[in-house]
Image (spheres, rainbow, N blue to C red):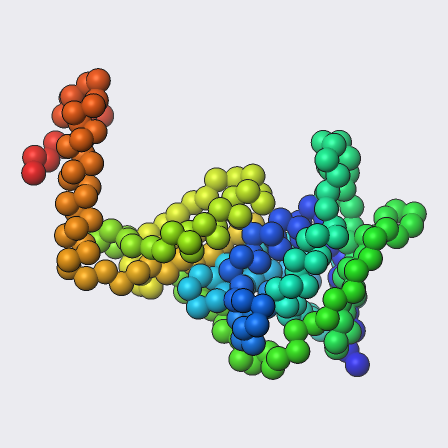
Length: 250
């Protein structure tokens, strides 16, 4: 039986799980319905998930690890929700700051993962959940997918079309880290690279648009421009020229 023990910080793991869990497949999905915690380095873990529409990864610092080899931990989506429900920060600002800095011990066996609040003097709450049981080799190579997107950030001259429900998943990342989302338009694969500082990165694939959709979007943009120009307190052309921008007349 292989075992491993990781020491993480509450304030690192909770936002990582909160940001990534929305990108996993449904509970009954035997391929995508998991969240993966893998050590890229002895001092850094990557929490990732994918469901075929979006993919995301969050970085977690690892102060200490006791293992013969860097472990890969797959958790069912339901198990991650249980972890988030049990290990919650206090409501008070000072208490929350202290809680964020405290250690969370993660102990793994072949079938289970135990999370325990590791205080300076005594241990706190503890939760044991089942590890993902399906073969790991069926899981997509999320790091490769995201690394490829990070390497190809050329702008697509065409506008992007995305599913609003999928966009909403990334809102959780911004809320988890209390930081703005940064979106970069990708040409290949067509979509958006979404990041939060240096702790979260994800990929939002776009909807394949035909010429009719593209033209309709252009028409909508022109209609909005016309309507808003009429409501502007200052003529749009004057505003653009004041910013040194070229005025393009349709």
